[in-house]
Image (cartoon, rainbow, N blue to C red; front, side):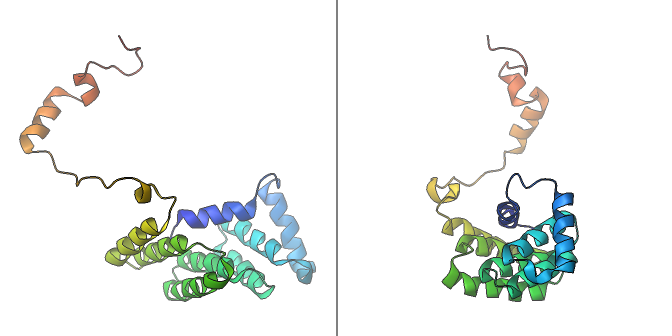
Length: 188
């Protein structure tokens, strides 16, 4: 399961100018082992992101669960949990976590409705349910006021070129050569 919204959330949690992932993760790992009670929910979430970025999805999941236990924003924690479970192929659990994220988002505003819809679509795709995936992702696009589809006029359906047009194009070369344009040369 992959979603650009998950990547954006991880980037927000990771932040800027925090130094090298390896050094930062080592410090947090040490603190998690020696003094776990001193880690605040955001630190657990950051550790989860750093583990995920290093490919340790099981460790990332454990850190998210610690973040939730420490009082992390429920919708964000469950959203992260859903994605990590999806990456681990545990789709039924991911679906339950996403449902919990949606329920919590109604009261804590941590995850946008469009992001939840996109995640539902990504999870449906991971389960092999293409029809539901398309429907949920389309709903997410329509729900997102920043989406270009929401503000742009609808495009007419694409038509396949006729076989004679396709063969004529293939004989005459790419469109830029037919127009007399050669890449890398200034216009005449």
